[in-house]
Image 1 (cartoon, rainbow, N blue to C red):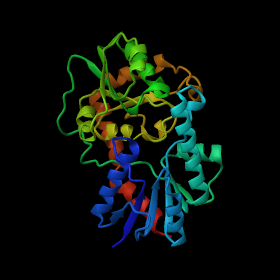
Image 2 (cartoon, rainbow, N blue to C red):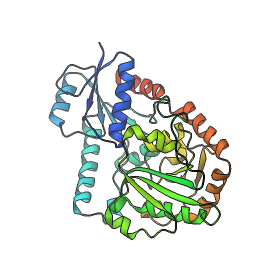
Image 3 (cartoon, rainbow, N blue to C red):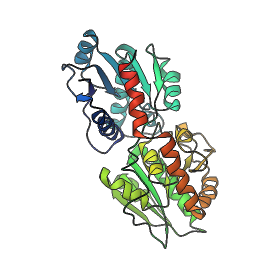
Image 4 (cartoon, rainbow, N blue to C red):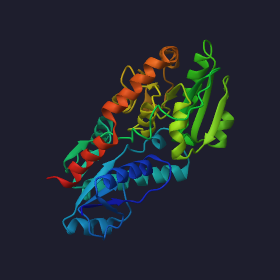
Length: 334
């Protein structure tokens, strides 16, 4: 039986853990086995970003096993905005390890978006290993417009769905509230935030519209949460390839945001609105709030149209089978 080694074994609700679970689901449905042990027999190794088990990774390569590295974005906020000693050290160490594995161990490289590929090649040069871009996928039967929903009728709900909007990563939260406040001049608005937000950020957030903090939401509850909202705001600045956006589209939730990172690659014009940033996102400057609020009003007015287009976009581009098949081609084929 064909078997893929996935390393590291990541758990939780973040993007890496979400990808691992979805990818394993796709492998299992194809009769392909999974191991997390680099010393075990396998046909290929998929490194999800980086791993500290470099000696074991090297031994696998010496046994003739192909090593494929899946790369997300590069840690960069700490170079622009002070985020604390611990965060900064972890971010810079992470960058070093990812680039080292890419340079020394990877036989193939998979970037999650064209934006990520260009970013890595601009900062660290073109990889020696063959590289390809594979956009993330989602289970379209789990993330669907059909199912339980508690979408309010008396207020428009803007959803933020991020792993963390704490400390140095909180800029997008303030931008989202500003957009909602602009919209509230015409539409009754509320902001619902799913993800980690630290107490200091909450205390500094002065909002004219209601803001609800849900904390970390279990993965199983995300489809219902998406169906219970009217639009999603992508709060990450320069998002590499946000799973939350793909999951929202699959649930028929239109997405709005500023044109930075890979967002324009994911959200088509009829599935939401991605407007020019209007400033320098790499310096975390304040974007053009008014422009996004004006476009977002159209999404609120034409919910049925945008919701149908969002789902159609996901069905066309972000199915799990398409993603898994693309990964297997890189992992197993010459």
